[in-house]
Length: 85
Image (cartoon, rainbow, N blue to C red; front, side, top):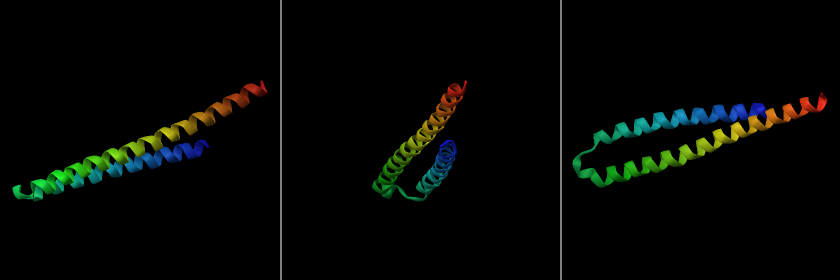
């Protein structure tokens, strides 16, 4: 359980780093459009914001679940050591 918790934390951090770099890349593409594309750009920015919020929330939830698994494993270990004393 503890290994799975650390694995999930690592995966969530990896996803977060990928999300940050892809967001930066998407924002850089906005500068290539003219003023006539205002509707497209506003929709593009709206999509970026929604995507980042959704993936950020999912990544944060995965990170919290990994922490919960680690805490559960630590508690189980403490209970077993107290029971042996």
